[in-house]
Length: 433
Image 1 (cartoon, helix red, strand yellow):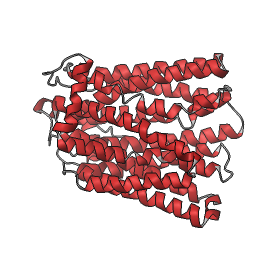
Image 2 (cartoon, helix red, strand yellow):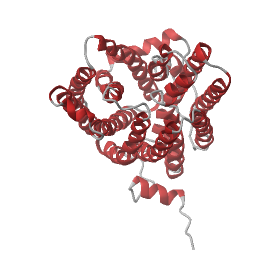
Image 3 (spheres, one colour):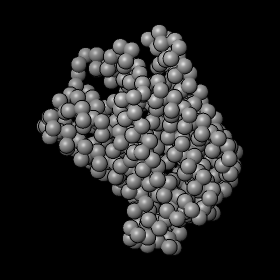
Image 4 (tube, rainbow, N blue to C red):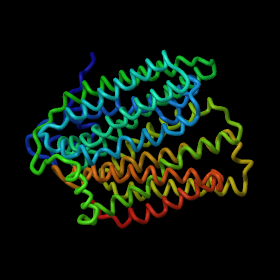
């Protein structure tokens, strides 16, 4: 006879706590429904992170554009738009979000817009090609990224209102692990279909991604969120830009933003590992293997980084950034002194796996650290200012890729590794949360 596990029991097992009522950093009303919110948030994050994997700007979208005979100039814009497009507008929308006592509906709205954008991309894939398809996909990606901005501002605030401190990292960690397993399955399936030349499989993947966003929105809507503070909410871009004074007036926050900017090295260096692999004669289908490796990294490292973030998110940032730097330095030394090792079937994929594990630590560590830094509306301001500044930094630091005319890929990886060392030193000096 099967025993049904309640949300309370599942929460106690996942959160590794015997007292499901032990709360820190949330009000008493929210404390009464922590177990249900924990499981609901976990499920919604699994669905949304799997959806993100299905709309991968490094694999899925380039494959779609290539299949539609879209010029490579369009493909070069995919990653910058996907990443910075969701960050830059957040300062302008933060005041609107903070004026709402219940903010989960902002996330639901963003998720549904993302689902519709992906469905529209599927239609484009079925009806258009060449330049027209390129312009349409880029325009839809802009809408998709802007919708992600609403999700990002609301998500951290809802997490901070509904889940106590020392339990928040676990939610993201378990979600990353579960989504990682799903990504492995998708990556292997993608590799199989690429071998057989089934171009329609990418449209199936995108359709599945859109469906995942719809399901994530429906699940997120069930969160029991209690009204939060709305004082100080104003409208107007000038008022929003005034929030940038936080970088001057709030020294610990400014220090965190600097650290986060330096730790962009983990994300920005990843494409050069894949390009370096392609230079060794690896064919395009191996990109699906790299995608599967990304999923495997999330699967095995998500819970570890998540629980370690609940103990000390500062330590996670330090350890993860050191791992990024050591990994990159090793790749540079091998490429410079023992280039024959680069052609090994296992070396570069293995280095990419370690990089992705470290990147998971950077993501979970900085997310948990930021959520724990402040309460109420101040958290919303922190998220908006931080993400807006990082959006600008992404465009600026991403332009280092233009140095490829003078530097090889291993040397570019070395530059990002040195950034990681600076990020580790900066993280060591962060205040402990």
